[in-house]
Length: 229
Image (cartoon, rainbow, N blue to C red):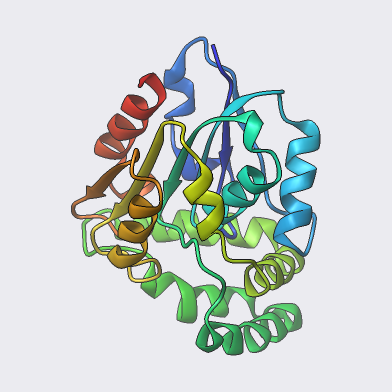
């Protein structure tokens, strides 16, 4: 059975995937953090150095961006690909301009307010689980700390466009998003779906940027279908 490699989003850890990995019975699940390097290329290379020879690959948000770079560097090792609430394009100038002030604030001891004021308000759809999910997001972020925030921000700021990478992939693919995702909106996922015409596009209703936490059951149903295709 092909191992599954999971890559979390920015300032998230394995808790982003909830209990889904535990449900996969005999399948090996590998959690690959994006914490030790300052470029997407270096992060991907370090994950590949430790990964099995061939694997299924899923990433959410920054994890999806790293997954696309893994695919670019070693396409022969990726059996199937799932991209959740992510962006195949290089950073826009508008977002690039915001990165350094956020880095400066985080490194000066203000990471909690950066997460609270500038990032977390854009994460979720309205819903009764918001407080629980946002508390978990804050706990993950504060556990990782400001140095990792700075490294991840620089990696995202300087990332490459991956449209050609996706267009070359012909394996089973899932493109999934929360309907209310304001960070990575619908048109970006539709673009990825066009780049990979063999992919399945799934939109999770009543979810925003973190459907694995907001609406875990339909999200994991879609991921399970992708794994078994």
